[in-house]
Amino acid sequence: DVISYSNFIQDIITDDLKTNKNGGRVVTRFPPEPNGYLHIGHAKSICINFGLSIQNKGKCNLRFDDTNPVKEDVEYVDSIQTDVKWLGFDWEDRMYYASDYFERIYNCAVELIKIGKAYVCDLTADQIREYRGTLTEPGKDSPFRNRSVEENLDLFEKMKNGQFEDGSRVLRAKIDMASPNLNMRDPVIYRILHATHHRSGDKWCIYPMYDFAHPISDALEGITHSICTLEFEAHRPLYDWFLETLNFQDRPRQIEFARLNLTYTVMSKRKLLELVKNSYVAGWDDPRMPTISGMRRRGYTPEAIRDFCERIGVAKTSSTVDVALLEHCIREDLNAKATRVMAVLRPIKVVLENYPDDQVEWFDAENNPEDPNAGTRKVPFSKVIYIDRDDFMENPPKKYFRLFPGSEVRLKHAYFITCKSVVKDEKGEITELICTYDPESRGGNSPDGRKVKGTIQWVSAKHAIDAEVRLYDQLFKCPNPDESESGDYKENLNPNSLETLYNCKLEPSLKESKLEDRYQFIRTGYFCIDSVDSKEDKFVFNRIVALKDSWAK
Ligand code: ATP
Ligand code: MG
Ligand code: MG
Image 1 (cartoon, rainbow, N blue to C red):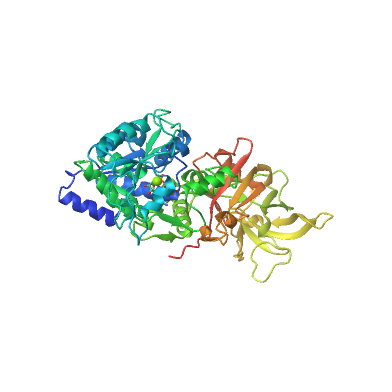
Image 2 (spheres, rainbow, N blue to C red; image 1 turned 135 degrees about the vertical axis):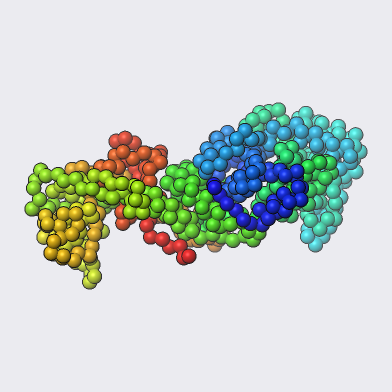
């Protein structure tokens, strides 16, 4: 099973199937606007729509909601397809564009005019807002509300033919200026916009509004359950009004759920675009971004993202999910799958003075203690090795079990070593450690049963691969970046969200790593190759997530 949902939407579908409401059909859709890359919030919507269609043996359409030419682009259309597929979902031959319905949506507007339910209005945008009234005050009729059908048909045709300027007129539905629901007070359904559309080019200079295009697109595709986020709850009467008034026979039902918000990030495409445009990040796929492409490059798995979407569930009230849960999901997935390897991120050289100069030994290293089928690999050992600077202290506190002058530690998979002396340069910086190894402790235990508490990773100097390693922290420094005092979320960007280590030493088996491989660098975290910057002769690894789990179950 790709995903399994029991929630209030599934309950509605179950009831509909029982009463044979849609003739047993279940058709959902995921309708992104191609005006940016998909983010983890979209992943929730994708999992819900595709997940519900799969578990009810229905269909799920991918529909580009491309009715706003100014902000849309084919780059986004392409990235959205890549991301949905990568998440593990398949729309088969059911990919649609709202722009393909422009002709039919236009005809629906003409139909509304003909039955006296739409009119061309010459008020400015400001006037329309003013006339609309407020929650406590009824609206006022537009002076153009009672134009004849003939005049409206003529003006609307002229709008379509490009005879008027942008913003000079709109087409409005004629509903109820006294409705307690502001969305029902003669909403605008078409606007004039002389802009080139990424698919229809310059064919149209009028474009339908979302609230008009969406229910019609849903109905034309035979959608049964049109799932959207809570902001559209108050638009539902309008959604239903269009479908009823236009006399569609099979009417989709709009169902709202709470959108996903995550701590330490922002989720609006407008803000993500701003971060990209102004180079706060390296692009939509920057590994710190909450985008699907960023998470993919960072090393997240589709399985972990789907697991996350399942765990957060589907509710009717908004809340903010702790990013620690997302991190918990990726850790759990990688704990089961990732090969354990040795990597030294901040190297310090260790010379084993009693080890034969040119000797090389190959130790068997377990690939994954969580997976008995994962096997082993060979790791080379020699006289000069690297260990992590953080595993040595010249003047350690009590209970420090790693290396310090006079102490003994276990090198993972290899020998016990004891630190004999510290070599420093003129400036007093430590350049290397002189140690001895105990030949009797081969494999990690000594025959005399000596206790050694600390076990550390290491890499043979002459076999090591050099790599750049990027450590990521949250993109924002506070849990709710949208709540900054100045009102500018950018003030909450974390200046330390990326730390780059240039001189890392990795065990040679990593020479073979491929893009989809994910590793646990033991004692450090989970890592993978950076798909953009890593090259044959210059390895770049991303830290997917650190080992320590802060998710409180
Ligand atoms: P944004 O405000 O980021 O531009 P949007 O809702 O305008 O988001 P769309 O491209 O229209 O973006 O979204 C496609 C689908 O994904 C919609 O059905 C929308 O409800 C859903 N979606 C968008 N953001 C979220 C979110 N944070 N959580 C859940 N679903 C979301
Ligand atoms: Mg939208
Ligand atoms: Mg939007």
